[in-house]
Length: 476
Image (cartoon, rainbow, N blue to C red; front, side, top):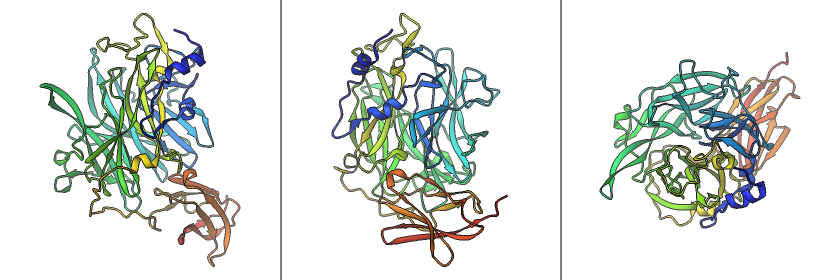
């Protein structure tokens, strides 16, 4: 099937915004590719430097495709793509160490029917940690979850170090989202588990969210799970952190010291279902229940008059903007092999190709006022982490250094801030100014011109200034 680009674009994105949230056509067009990664779902992002974002996709098309047309079946089970904030329209598809393999994360023992789908992850110092979930797909298309794994990569050359199995988690699929707090040593790992409930006298499967915590410098260390009495050692004691169901993929953000969960109405891959994107309000601490919900966007995306399947909305806070708000993606699909869903375009019913835009992520912007307005108060009186930036929160690495100095700054000030290099007497030697929307969890500055010695790195905003020492080593 072929259509002119302009006509297709007009037909495809008939999108109705809900409240003040808006479709982001600029960001959506970044992912209209004709080579490398071309189409896929999942659409998970991990910032690994101030300028570098890793995008993780599930089932994907990797290769060169023309006329905006792709085959009916993906040729990769997962893909990793590098994006630069300085040039966001240019995407680089990473290659599996075995260049003959399209799929990026793949063990030598895994066949085509057993594979990894990516979860979320994070960078800590000199390692990028990515959660993977392993599945087996039967001949009838039934999926069996075979456990959660942890991949380790270099943030510098993006080399894949290892893929290791995590401990069993009582059928909870962890790694959907990872939240790195600012003042303690924890990584909070969010997951979900499938439950069967009765709805209209019929069994219905729903996903409930859970959270665990572990050492952020070693997520293979023992975990603790949010339980009815606090944090327990066994996943069998874990309890859901919301009575609301969530989609298989979801994310958690913090705004004005409150945690929010971004999710989507579960349409069970039925075309025309699952159109609402939800926000669940939590408390100030990880593990506080998410007990309020509102719709922040309503999807109305079709292809040639037929609804597509839409699923797994996911936030990308590294692309936050102080005016435009939170960037959120959602996935679309035209099921190729299941004809029980009325109304789908079914492009592959009478052919072997489909339009690539029916399997590419779409993006929206949710303004901050839409996120924070209209809630009733449910603030928790107990906090498990401080919520203001202090000197213990940011780390410097490598230290000593001779060229680049990276600053791990998980909590970005909400206003313009300055980074200064001072000598030990407090005299300013070099400085940089950052806007909140330009900063990331890791900021790198060039200190190669400094002579060897001991210096102070200062972060200054409002009337507050935070300092740490670092060393310039002799240049080899």
